[in-house]
Image (cartoon, rainbow, N blue to C red; front, side):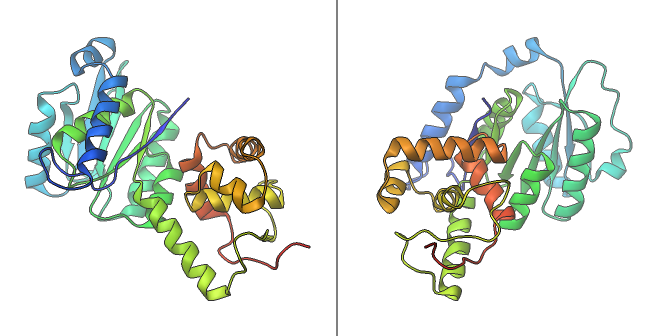
Length: 273
């Protein structure tokens, strides 16, 4: 199953902050599931393409990646400048592309690349997170969405995970989703969380109960918390969550939250009777 890893503003190794634990956990997890870069190179032919408009940053990334299995076969300021995608042969394309200048166009290009080369991997590099842009990148088929402030080690390990079929999206999106929900709740004076709220119309064939539980997933609630809110068992919650993931074709709770952000209405209706 394709997992989604959370990677949000992690500090560089040696940094003194509470997120050192998150960084260490991420690196431990990355090392536990991926082979070495040498093994990657031996296992498959990788053709990395680097698109970065800033010449200095582009050269820095090229040098960092030159000692790995992801040494760029081509580097340019834009896809137009690069021209047509180099000959693929039996190689797997890994497109490492800046998405901070024209995000919509980058998503369009990523979608086109995925349509013509389903095995291609797309890693987007951005300056700051924006909810709509993260959702757009997810829907365009991006495999990783990374801040340019990550360390070179995190970048390489993230590429390793992407090559294994994993997805890396920021955990910050959950905070953005919660903020959006809080604003909607305040504007509409939502009733108490213990009550069921109907969203009209339910999306993707979801029942009212499933739609409400999906909103709880957007809030980052655990199964135990959801069970307490609606006075049901955790086993029942698990059944609902599995049904939700199946109906919206999401692999995990994070993907479900991202899907909900762009498909569910932000306003709430009246409580069910």
